Image 1: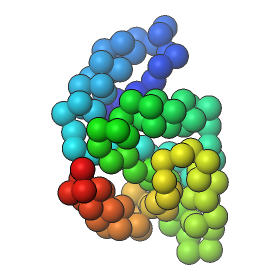
Image 2: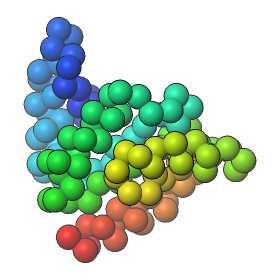
Image 3: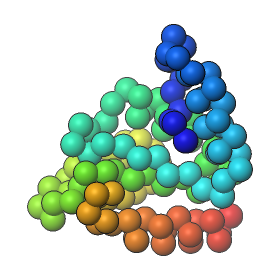
Image 4: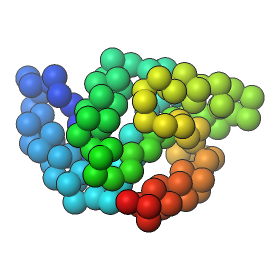
Length: 115
């Protein structure tokens, strides 16, 4: 989806994008929140995590993917910055290099099977 944003009411198509994201969540078996490990936690990341904890985690598994963590030396450190999001273990991944994505998907599958 285009992404879920709550406070961007002035943006073109914001309501439509938000609506489509909500439909996608309702139709899914699990949710992966992807955040930018190079930037660190943002206010928007926190807002989305709060929404997911309150509204979604009761219905389906929610995983946290911390992207841009391809480095063996700093990837785990970058991901650890997101523990306080309250969505369980942050998964260090690199979408560009494929690092950590298999483990993330395996954990998501296990979460879906349990629910």
